[in-house]
Length: 334
Ligand code: KG4
Image: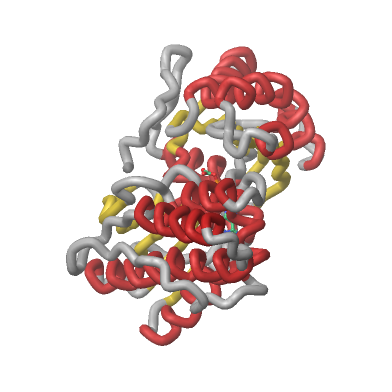
């Protein structure tokens, strides 16, 4: 059996072919970073237009890379939500149309479910249940995951997502978009203790996050330096900001594992590619006797392979989409 998966929830057009055993036969991603970089963030209308241009070539490339044709495909899975509706509609409608024409089953997949299961694409896979931190440009949430189809949200951000904070701080420092990779690169050369930015822990034992105060603190620091004609120590600002984000993400993930009693911790989402977060979680999980599972970098950021995995389980549960099934902008999981 071969699953053709499509992902177009935000600014990447992606397609992949995966097997029911979670083997990735191909994974193709067409990034729109260049289009949005000069605006310092994603422009939804430009994103959907680019998806329309790229969806067919990306799907063709995924099939070619897997050395397969449409006749070899048995199931089509596509991201149904959450995300930018214009972007989602391109991939989801393409998938439904292709399935209709080819007489294939089609499943709509929640993007969050894809991130929650992205670790299953690795050779070393977690067994269920596990505690998962999903941390990206649109989400920062903790989940208890009992099976591929059953999860409970434990906490989420009350304002900005961690990736959004990286992107906004990068914009403030005029470092371009997306902010995460450039900030983590500069942070590696800075002193994480140079500036003591705030850590929002909210109530004791709370598993919710808040990053808007941290973003404001960075803005106030930058403004203060500029007003007093002081040079900006950009590397130190990046390192100190990153440390504040990482410290909270790690502490709350460990607290979530304590509360669930799970011995396995999983991370996913674009910010899970952050080297400092990976290092800190590795150290802390080892110290607490927790098993940590992290997707490889290619499966942290948006990709279609994870949608194929999540789609396969929806298919097994008989949750098929038909021509009338609509895309949605907010996740019922979150
Ligand atoms: O999962 P993703 O590709 O898209 C969604 O938001 O769904 O995540 C993109 C986010 C962006 O905010 C980007 O700045 C952040 O992930 N990101 C990182 C790193 N690489 C990507 N954040 C911190 N460190 C990184 N190395």
